Structure formats: C-alpha cells, structure tokens
Amino acid sequence: MGINDESDIEANLQIGPTDQGMVRLFVAGEGLEIPMDFEPEEAEEIAEEIRAAAQAARRAKRR
Image 1 (cartoon, rainbow, N blue to C red):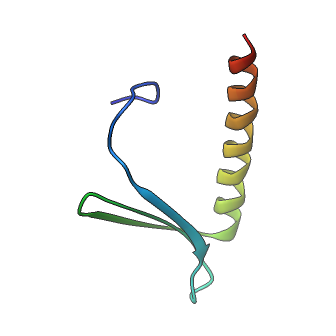
Image 2: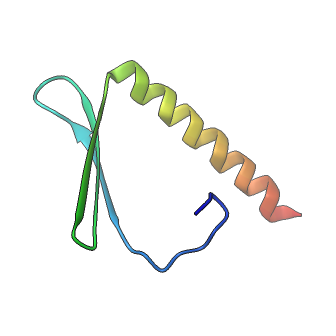
C-alpha cells in the first residue's frame, strides 16, 4: 500500500506529551495499537512535514 492508495481501514490518532518528555503519536484501530515516541525536535520536524504536505495537497486540489 502506498501513499496514494485508498483504504477502508479506520484508525484513531492521538498526539500528546508523555511524562518522560517525549511527544507520542498513538494510532489505534482494528485491534492494533501503535505508540510512536519522538524527541521534541523530531516532533517539530514531523509537524513541518505535515504542514508542507497540507500546502501541497491544497495546490493539487486547485488543479
């Protein structure tokens, strides 16, 4: 499965700080739980990538 492949799988995403000073992305769905912990600097890089992807998606939608 790639980034452009559609899927009927549903999942929930939670994002928040941990008591250990990490940023956790927690994905849960269909009997699966995936906790992903990142240093704050890594989380900021991910946030920048998400913003850039959102901007690119807006440009693609206008075409």
